[in-house]
Length: 170
Image 1: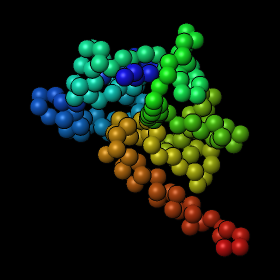
Image 2 (image 1 turned 60 degrees about the horizontal axis):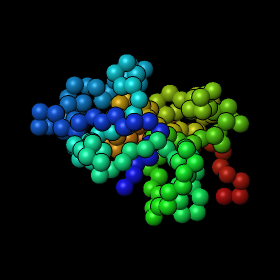
Image 3 (image 1 turned 90 degrees about the vertical axis):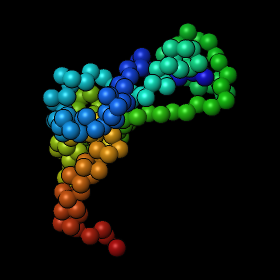
Image 4 (image 1 turned 135 degrees about the vertical axis):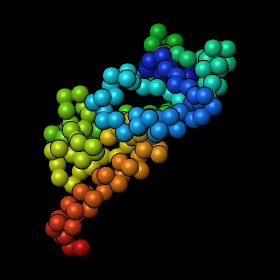
């Protein structure tokens, strides 16, 4: 089995002193630090691991390779041009949204990321984002954190919808 990724995997242990890392992040308040503070502590993407994934890579039962460059029929094409037949390709894209279709609207910055504050568009009233990495805090990177982000963006979205003119013909 092969795991292809853009960069080497950086693991964060799931358990510390017998407790889940989320216990420590919540208790320490780290979950709620603003994203601009977090870049000083978290450089890049971390993968929570209870030890099984790191062990699988270290023992060779799971091979980690740089990302393939193409899919061709029933094969992946690696960066050196070799083709490897595969049965399954599972794309786990994580927190990297592809929002290029918003570029013509001016809703994205030069790096292609949404121009927003806490998930609320800075360029277009009525546009909100949910599920962005570090949207409002470190907790935004987790399923338990997305609830708080949703609670944050829904009131302004609802206010916009209430004030928006009714759709023609509806």
